[in-house]
Image (tube, rainbow, N blue to C red; front, side):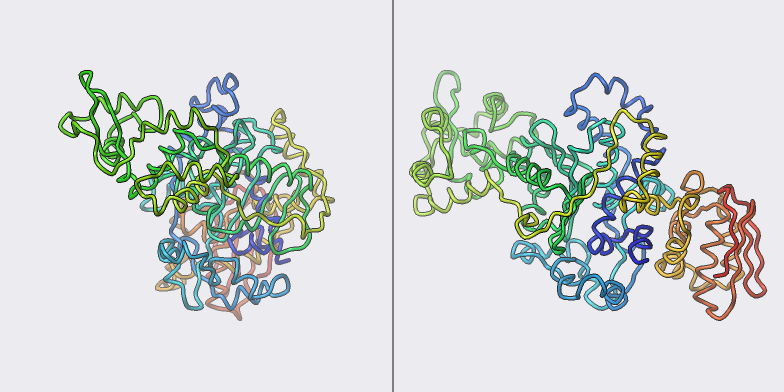
Length: 560
């Protein structure tokens, strides 16, 4: 029951304990008519004539335009460590959760201590027993953020955006599921897309392999999770692998392929462009270099940090063939007539790399490069080691050698399928494939699922409406819900949870009745609540009687 009710609420901690949920969210989004409608958006016209790589970049801009990154941890209210640890005790012990989950004390390594990562994410407010739910949203819930004050578009947190990207890559860009891998860390969620040289999604943006090594501040932020955190979950259409659980359901050969492709993406050779990119990221080291430029047939010299500063207002870069154009944009009074004492001419590395193809895995090549850093000679070896870290990252992935691979059947969806065919195939897999079954619960599909998990989640894990109504009398709550637009953020027989109704200020009659039931149940636990859905949603609780129209087409009689 905890697994299935967690598929409804999809909190960060639930996904960590039940890794099957990560892909169930992807499948729920793949079934959503919202994402299939994107195919008809003019922005994606002629997408079929683009390469997979160009399609992904097109999708990126669409997501940036239509969604904000939401880091308001209180969007979905608060729970307590004590309550959640009790829920998860049959599946994972407290110590394991605390080592790997940000809401239960995870701090990360020294890097995260240095940048006060808990303060950065707002987790420092929750050092006590109280913690945020940090729920993941479906595409419908993401779209509905536009109804919340302060939001002009849709929004979502990192796992929501990761799930959205994975689904849209398949539905809109027609990238096969075989090429899409989801990765979760204690503080982040990203996807690796195995197209071209590899693409990493990072919240709303994507990072190509070339971008990974460009040395910009934006790229450094996108590298933060893989450089400093343990990857806890890798999820794929063939299954998943989890850092804690001994059994992996992903195919062993698929996981090996993923590890190899990701490691290739995270590795580059050292050359002039990469060295210049490295210096862009290491401003203090720029003071060791100067750049020579001919002005009027005469050699002139300029501090490297000055040139890097001019990059900020230019489309030209120090690191590529546009460097000369960048230098031409700089006022002549920034240049020196003579070489600057104690600085290495960066230009000389062009000849060095033409004559020396280095493999930084070899000690002799590292020493050869170190000898070129004559300015900071005492730190030369340290600088080269730092360059090695810049050009090669060994991600901390779940160890395949310690796992038993109990491979499950892959979910064989293809980009050529229609939405109706996708839904039909997933429906047919439900009796034998748990992730396929869970996807209908993640989609809140009350017309195709047992209502018990949905109702348990609605009555136990929706604190926002309780807090919002705390100063209202029962009649005021009823009036507040009655005044809401009678419209659901979900299509068909799919239904919103009470806090979605409250946060977005709207709901179908059945959804609003469930929201009211949640509030009344907490206020009057001894009162019987009767809820009937048969064209109208009718609720009875003591003296309270309501009847609101519902378009969900669901017939049910409930005693809550």
